[in-house]
Length: 184
Image (cartoon, rainbow, N blue to C red; front, side, top):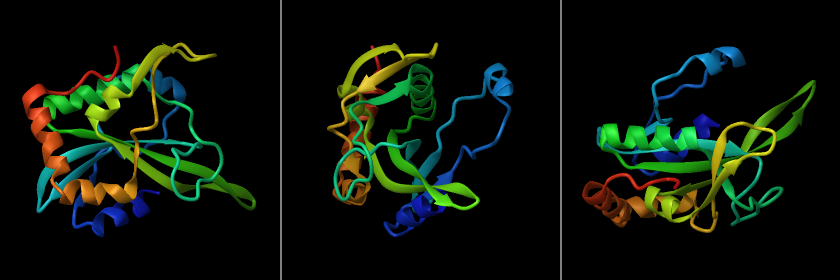
């Protein structure tokens, strides 16, 4: 999945640096260990960091071309993840985009493999404006924020977002008003 994601960025002349590498840890170790907030990727243009990406995955799609499976009714993100995104954005003074990859399992005997079949993104201001409510998920103890999915855009529009200067406008807004609240 990461290789396909990085290849898509290479085609746009933006460089993608993976910051938070996935690691397998026992569940107990994850609960006890409070890691320093980080984001998954940094986007560079000619060697200069211009934005960050937090990548989330799920089985549902956000609409658009040839969707596979169910459309996501609302996007959910734990308050802890929201806090980590905001902390990194404020500490690094960098706009952090949220990306959602639809990942489905494919039979590959004797087991299964996971394949990314769709990718969408949203800027932090649109994400903040999409906030609907917060509540504890059923059968969990963490509080999650719920967002409308109508402002997520397909990955194919990200290069245009950068090339047309829309990304620079988001950055200017960030410089003026800071990281928007991701939940209330």
